[in-house]
Length: 298
Image (tube, rainbow, N blue to C red):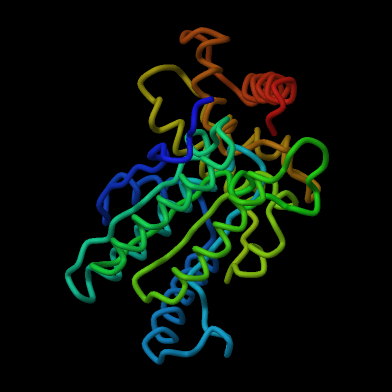
């Protein structure tokens, strides 16, 4: 019988240095209102001040943990990267130190070998902890429901390894919260599947929903500018599309990812010689939404 007890756990993270223009650009590509931007800024101000005052966690000190949740394609990962970059830019402006971004990948974390997943997650946190002793770090975990699984919802099979991973995440994030050098940000498509103990530890839990009419307009206008030399879009096409689909205080379930594909796919479906109007845009939007629904997307 093979003994895997001494096997080295797989490396399940990637890392890079922040601030990073790519992370900044991806964060800025997501349309958020000015109030939300101010909210994020106030959060980092409060986090820095509470850490500087060494307010104990037991007395309500912020832990430096933020979770974005919502349907696929609405910009959670981009917002997470943008927020990570904001943290890094603040630290760089303050003390000239660059931040290391560690991203733990769920697809790499789970092994068929019993116990290996928890060991791999623990080893990754050990690397993050070591880096935090020498400078600021951000830990990014997409698909948070894979790492901190709602243990109340587990049923059937052998959940022991899953529980070990969740316990490791909780224990390790508690330890990281003691460091003023660490910021943790996670994303999840399924907030109800994230363990309640992790949700309780998060300072902010932010829903990133489907774009409203103003956000949809901004996305479509930005995409139209990018594809201006590819096809012909009627001057009133976007205004009419918004009026037809976002009236009466209702908004369709169109993600930002879907909205960004509407203009280029209109040129594909109706040829670049057709003057694309609102009806063309609406037809393409319905086609994409139907396909996404069939694929289990939202």
